[in-house]
Structure formats: structure tokens, C-alpha cells
Length: 628
Image (cartoon, rainbow, N blue to C red; front, side):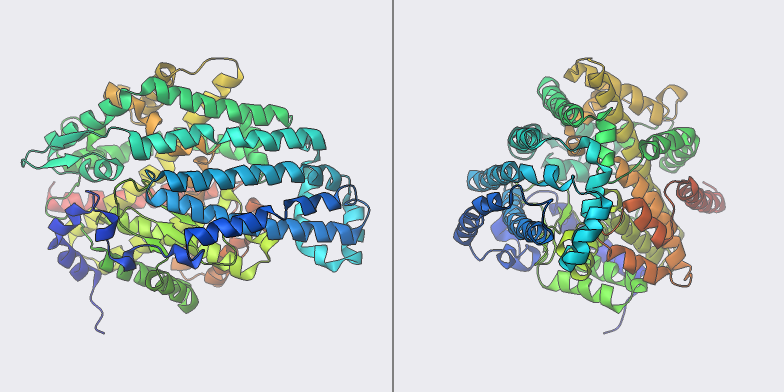
């Protein structure tokens, strides 16, 4: 086959702009090619098979009681209990993955919501029955653990977990208390579950008429698509309709989020942590200073972010940049539209530096239906990779709209999937699940490979400007925007921990202050309309317990690692492949050190700012040459 250049791929995609526009208007699932849907039959052949497997797993729960009182006394009993627990956990992970993916492909389907609730219920039941395990195991000090491993070598794969229990000993409660916390888990997911059903299935999304006379429905996928329209009046109409709709539910959304914050505080206090932040980060042995340093570094570099915003204003030829201008195309005539078939080719080309094995698994993912590609009615918004099933391949959910951002999202989720695939392939089950702190490194690393490939292949100035701005837009969204979210999340938890109530109105006021600071509203950098300050109410990640900061830290880590790979530093590819094959075999800070980046220093952030300024320097150079 003759390989075409990326520039030709872009031209071909531009000619297909009309079909791409249809992506954001959900088609019925029956109208989507089977090849473009995920093959959940790889987990269970039918829903009935799922129900039967659930009954089989649940029937074994009571066997766990036979180990009670014996874990600190016998190496063989400890090993048998941990292996039993691993087997049950693997079974439940498979059950849960199937149920939540079935539910996500159509959140309106109550049968799949019920299945998800069923598995949540039995998971809680099992956690309650297993409440005796950690209080017993924490009695084993390091010498006792080493003695047990010598007696039962099979315990070696559990050594990291057992020693980590010792580290967290002060926060491990009695059996009775652990059982209460486990039972509380059934209620803990309620705020997010309500938010998910409401935002994906029941929120009355608005419909508007555009300047060309067409009517569009602003679902989540529709909003993502049409907020980027080139016509400014259309964009402002999209923003007004969408955020006015969200704002109409400010009170309800506020109560939901406040409920989630109170849940986080409950767990932190129950385990004796000083704050919700400390509780959230301690699971991966991350110092709170890493979180606080990120927020501080970003705030000290807002001038760099404002330089990007001023470039966007210059390229759009605007007197005043508005929040509704942040997604607009900056170069006329370059839409960067890609049909999904071309997106797959681009991603495969981009990951070639990682070697044939990596690229071969990516190709397998495309061919063997690991991915659910297009938006359909009731489908969960956004994108994710699900790699929790140790004995099966990962799955990916997309809502592909045909833009370059969607190609980048495909590369991103492929990165997650490969991280899961190689960790599951290389590590024994107890060590395969990688910590959340490193979860976004492999994904944003792939985005870096993709933009590098595009810029190497394309010399046309207008197309380069579009891609460079897309890179900066992604940096804005992943580093600055996620840190803005992280600062908001920290402040709402601090306020609640100090006894301050969090109404929808109070959340909007707090979010408005942070948003305006980041975007330089008072400096005249970017105007923030009051209607968009309810944006917090539509961010699902605020229900994930201090997750968002890891997008930003991971981005700085992946920038540093990608530069090493692209510069062909000796051993860089091997170290990266080792990293994505390491699972949870060490603490995340140590895993990244072995890969070649130290997150306890400011170096990764500094390197990212340097890369950002290099991109802006090139944009300035091209604009000056064009006399713009």
C-alpha cells in the first residue's frame, strides 16, 4: 500500500466535512456499523450469562469467613485468603465492567442501570464480609511479613500490598469500623450516580437554530461540536443556550456536589486524616505538597497562559476575547476534519517510535472491536478506557465527532488501553492495577507523539498554525484548566471542612473567582460572562475525589518522557515500555523516577512551560512572516 502524507490526509478529510458534522447529532445505535461498536461479548456472551456468573461469584462469599482469625498466625492461611480474595476481585471486576459499559452505551436503559446497581450491592456485601482482613494483616510487622514469605513464597506478589498496609497502619480501623465503612459504600456513590443519570439521560438539552438555518440539539456531544463553530454569533448562541439550561439546575447540582464533598470528608475523618486531600493522596503515597506545588506553579505562570490567550485573540482578529471564543478555529479554511478511518491511520503512524509490539496491539484494538466509536442517543458523554478486566483486553468509549480533537482523544484513550494491556500482560494480578497518579501519563504521552508526527509531516503554514494552536489548546485544557479545577476542588473541600455550607449559588461564586483569575478577566485578557460560571455543575470529575490534578501532573511527566523518546535518548523507549508494563508494582513517584522523570521537583513543569513557549514562538514567527 502506498503511504500518503498527513497533509494529504487532512485535505481528504476537509473534503468530507459534511459527513463529519453529522457525528455530533447522535444516530440510532442500529445505524452504526457493528465494526464501530465494542464487542462486550468478549466478557459475557449474553446478559443471562452475566447474571449466572454474578450468582456464582456471590455464592462463594461466605467461604471468606473460614479465614477469619488466622491471617496473622499462618503463612499458608494468609496466602490462601489473599488468593481467594484475588479470585473474587477478578470476577467482580469483570461483572462490573460489563454492567457499567452496557449502561453507558444507553443510560436510558433501566435494565442495565439495575445490573450496575446489583453489582454495586454485592461488591458492598463482599467488602463488609472482608472487613476483618486488613485489621488482621496490619498486625504483621515487616519481619513477620518477610518470615511468612520465606515460608510461603507465593506471598511474594503480595509483599508490596502487605508493606503498604504497614505504612497506612494508623488509618486502618478495627474490623467493626471497617465493616461500617464498607456498608457505607452503598450510599457513597449516590451523588455521582444521580449526576450521571441526570446529565446523560434526563437533562433537557436545548435545541437552537444556527445562522445557516439548521437546527441542532446541544447534547454534550453537540455542545462540544458547535461551541467550535467559526461564526461568532453561533458560538455565543450555543454558549447562551447550553449554560442557561445548566444554570436552571444550579441548586440541584449544588446539592449533589455538596453531598459528594461531605462523603469525602466523612471517609477522611473516619480514617483519622487531617483533610480530604490527605486521605485521597495517601492511597498512592503522594505528598500533599505535590498537589499544592502544582497549583502554585500554575498560578505563578499565568502570564504564560495569558500569552496563549492573547495569541488566540490576535489570530481571531478580535478586540475582546470571550470565553465563547476559546474553542473557535483560529485559521480560516483549515477545519482539520478527519473521518474515523483516517484517525486510525494517524494514530498508528504516531505510535511507531514505541516499536512493533506496541503498534501491533493498537492495530488489534482497531480490528477486534475494543472501541465504541460514535455518539448515539442516551450514550454516556466523553471518552474513557476500561482496563479493569485482567483476563480480557481493555475497552474504550468514544463520542467521535470527526475533528482533530477527536483524533487526539483516540490517541489518548489508546494510551490508557496500552497501559492496561501491558501491565495486565506483564504483572501478576495483585500488582497489575496501576495507581491513579500515573494513569494519565501514557495517554497524554500518545497525544505528544501524535502532534509531533503531524508537525513533522506538515509544512503548510496555515495547517501548522492550526495544529500548533490545537497543541496549545490541549495544553490549556490538560494543564491549566485541570489545575483550575483542582484549585476549585481543593477550596470547596476546605470550605466544607471548616463548616461552611456549599449551595449552588456559593459554588458558582467561588468558581467565578477562580475562573476569572485564570483567564485574566480583570486584566482584560478574556471576558467571562456570568452565565458560564455555573460550568462547575457539568464537570463529572468533581465526583472523583481529587482526580483532576493528575491530568496536569501527568501532562508534565509525559511531556518530559516524550521529549526523551522523540530525541532518541538511549534507553528511553525501553524505559517507557517498562513503565507501562509495571502496573502497581511500586509507588507512582518511584515508577516515574525509573522511567526518567522526578515529580518531586519542578523540572517536569519547567520543561512543559519551555515546550509551550517554543510553540508560541513558532506561531509568532509565522504570523509575523504573514504580516498578521
